[in-house]
Amino acid sequence: MKHSIALLLLLVSPPAAAFTLSMMSSGSSFGRLFRISTWGESHGGGVGVTLDGCPPRIPLSRDEIQIDLDRRRPGQSRITTPRNEADSVEILSGLLYGNGEEESGVTLGTPIAMLVRNKDQRSGDYLENDMSVAYRPSHADATYDAKYGVRAIAGGGRSSARETIGRVAAGAVARKILRMYNGIEVLAYVSKVQDIEAENVDHDTFTMEQVDSNIVRCPDQASAEKMLARIDQIRKAGNSIGGVVTCVARNVPAGLGSPVFDKLEADLAKACMSIPAAKGFESGDGFAGTLLTGIDHNDEFYIDPETGATRTRTNRSGGIQGGISNGENIVVHVAFKPTSTIAQSQNTVTRDGKEVQLRGKGRHDPCVLPRAVPMVEAMVALTLVDALMCQKGQCELFPDNTPVEERSNPMGTTAKREGGPNKEAVGVGGGDKPIGLKVDEE
Image 1: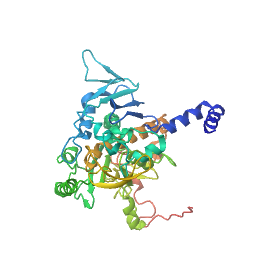
Image 2: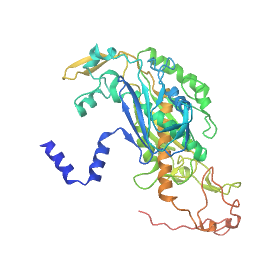
Image 3: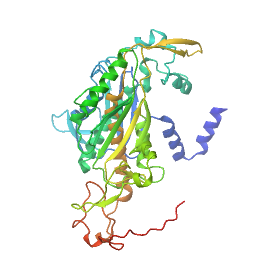
Image 4: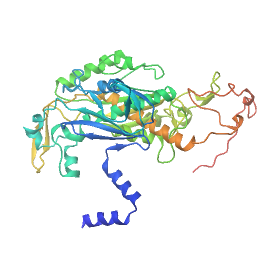
């Protein structure tokens, strides 16, 4: 009966509706105009991504992609999984190479397919013990079985963090586009491990080199040492630990994002919450903002005396207001839970419904945070490029011929007003007196 209803829906639905239905059901694609589809399992032949919608004529090399993959790969340190994978990327399509050139080229505007082959998978760690039938608590084992009726036991299949290789590879392309367009930088760092928080991190100036200067990936060295000590303590006990990754996007122009359902922070939330082990998302001050009053939380506007652009004195909004970027730094925070697989005994059940105890075996991360940093950067970069292309397609398809004096003042860190600050407008509203404003909002 269920099959008959599904078939009837497809027969009576127009082709567009049927296409939408198939796109919604797959779950392995992300983006609208700049769109990725990832594929492959943790212990299969390889994992990868197909990137569609990339603009043509973008200079791109294998090395640029490999840099981000190297930051994501396993086996980097004692606080990551010891699985030994080089994660060497192969670009299969979408690039035009010059004579004799095999490492760099230019994008063709056609789909870019990238593959990383699995080399060091040990399926026996899963298939030759109780983990082949028992569900790991808080892991995706049970829910994958509930959904599909079958699952890839070895390595967790698609639920493994190895799936993120495709995201990071495509994110490297997005990073290149953002940098070329407006000097946009997307940088993330570990801002919290349990209750240990990073301090003295300047979101305007911290660098990737500072982030990568220690194995925790925290640019505050003093806090990084405390975080590492805590992770080591938990790791040696056969346990795992979680925390928060903060991501900052600089030089993002104002205007990205769309009301009502496609707000920029909503798209960023979906992007970041799709990362394995992600359990929370905040934009700007997030939940901490609920402790403030409006006068304390509002970001007051001012005119930059040098550029004449509209700026905010604070950035509690995290660079997004009304779901649209305002030209300030975009700041988001992503919470990651402790890794599900641990080397301590836990109560669980088997696939056939028996209560048992399970002790995790094999190789896994005691803390996902250091390797989550490039994952968050990738998802933020992919979201921003997609939003940028949507903005160009809808609002900037035709030139704005409105006289300069009638346009809204440009906004943001990289914006400039023609001729500098509008000195004639200073004092509008009666000198030092506040401008009266009557509102009638729901």
